[in-house]
Image (cartoon, rainbow, N blue to C red):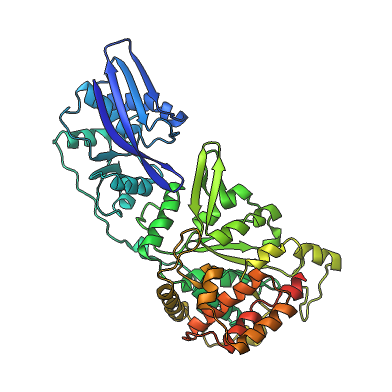
Amino acid sequence: MLSCTYSAGIFGIDGYMVTVECNTSKRLSCFEIVGLPDNAIKEAKERVRSASINSGFPFPDCELIVNLAPADIKKEGSAFDLAIILNILKCAGSLNFDVELEDRCFIGELSLSGAIRPVRGVLCMTIAAKNAGMKQIFVPEENVKEASVVQGIEAYGVKNLRQVVDFLNGKVKIERSEYVPTEADENISCPDFADVMGQSMAKRAMEIAAAGGHNIILIGPPGTGKSMLAKRLPSILPEMNFDESIETTKVHSISGLLPDDVSLIKVRPFRSPHHTMSTASLVGGGKIPTPGEISLANNGVLFLDELPEFNKQVTESLRQPLEDGCITITRTAGKVKYPCSFMLVCAMNPCRCGYYGHPTKPCTCKEGDIKKYLKKISGPLLDRIDIQIEVPSLSYSELSQKKASEPSSEIRKRVSKARAVARERYKDELTDNGIRINCNAQLEAKHLRKYCELDDQCRSIMERAFKNLGLSARGHDRILRLARTIADLDGSEKIKVPHIAEAIQLRSLDKKYFN
């Protein structure tokens, strides 16, 4: 007897449909799973046998052959358990043979007791099921919130095998899950810029960075507020649209990092890895590649504190993702592409002791040690950082002022307005990688000629800066993008002299620190 159900797997950030076929024959008892299963799937034989018996369903004593199609794709994970056992029970007669399964998708891991446990990547698999024309999807109860986000397919959360079989046999009812935004979805727990005293120049730089999606590096002695400023950046970033939320949630779902009470991530992520991390942890990797920190920070912020302390090989691996907004990882198991459109925020001391150039505290580092410390950051990586800003030590009067600083909510209004202008301007523009342009930092050379035209006076200022600062072609283009953002914040359609001058000022630390 032959039975067929449908499940789904994940590869990279995308789900794909898997046809689960089961054939039973009255031969010597055996149980085989074919179709390039990994060890977790091979071990499903014992899980489904025990789950069936403990749920009150007799397990057939015959030859069982289960095939996972397409058979040329390596399957991994335990999400196929539910589809496998339903096929077996249908062949055994515990599940009515006339039950229609053609437009239903089943996802879940079985425990020995028959309980259905949560799995990773349910959102990705639900989208794949919907695109394949499935009308219903059955997922573990803990995963049903993220599955219900997808419109056009009915999502059902199930607790155990007995409940699923009884529902399919028409004995019980299971309520369809509807997507309802929760407080956890909307919660923005970011600290506020109102807590930061002084540092008006640094705050202005952070506002410009947020308005244009620009990368920024903060340089200054210890205790000046570099980390405070970086951690408050998400509080002034504009809200994610639905497509950005879906993309971000997919990455966190396949990584197993989606909180239980969150169905859709609406708050831009903030990732702050430790400087001892490996290259694979940053960009992604593994036998079947999983997302790294740059992908987990997609549509949000990646903060590298104490940048020179990171392994140089790790920081150099950022160069291509910063340009492309995506990363392709190739392994023997296949090639996956992950999104990584993030804002890079770096903080560093000017030397190992932290007081090089300090007005009152003497630096204890040797000149050679200072150069060696700063050389840990390569020129090509610096070229990809749009804004370089000093964060100086504060005076007592600045620290003790009673007037509260401007709150994040006010800064966010200006940032959102500037982003909206840019989004409307570039609504028909795509990058060479096919990514839709949403902010000025994503502009490529072909767009700069169209949207960042300079008059004669601005061009003259730009020419002098190019020669005096020793800018590269990439540095030149990044100043133009900065000027475009500053003009948007100023409500100006044209780039004017003050805009280009401020943009150059925000890129002027190369000579002071990095020669």
